[in-house]
Length: 228
Image (cartoon, rainbow, N blue to C red; front, side, top):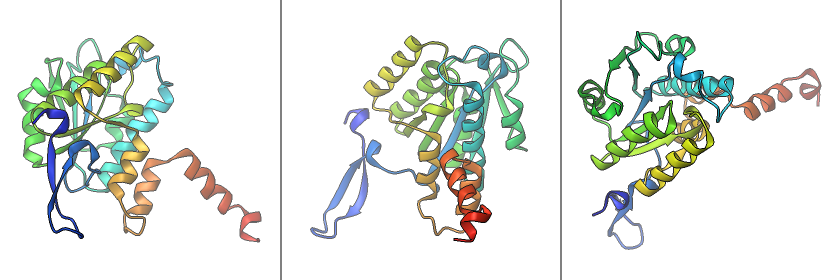
């Protein structure tokens, strides 16, 4: 079966009792089966990002990391020679992930680094959320490789960035052709949460810091709103 149509068993349907086979890209994310891979979120690479404002990119990747941590989703952090040309991981991200080691590597495709691959395999999880700078290399290449290896890989578009429109378009086209879905940081977060009645919901929404949700909360808690 082709990689982009790889299916998983979803259990018997209520009407027929027959087992359904659901394509990976139609499955929702499960916090019990997901690992977050953050690739090359480095200060030097951020200086070249042009497709998303830097403040927004930092907010999104840090928020995603915090939400994942709140839900017990493992986070793997890797950087290309952080002591060299591209610099260290952005400090906002390392501050959000205390105790999470940075896997230093030389391989361009993070999936090709045995240390990264082993870290993923040790989690025992089969759904991989990938966010990287740049999108078309640091996010797309490991996501496509993971997909080819049988994982359900997704790329978090607004927690990734690149250097011009051509690179963004080419990266998205390659992901589409490879059958790797893209998502955004907030959708990925609430998809993992799954239930607003979950005891962790408050912590997750606080971590995600979704702008419109923050505005609604502020409006709800103004003195005027409380008096209505």
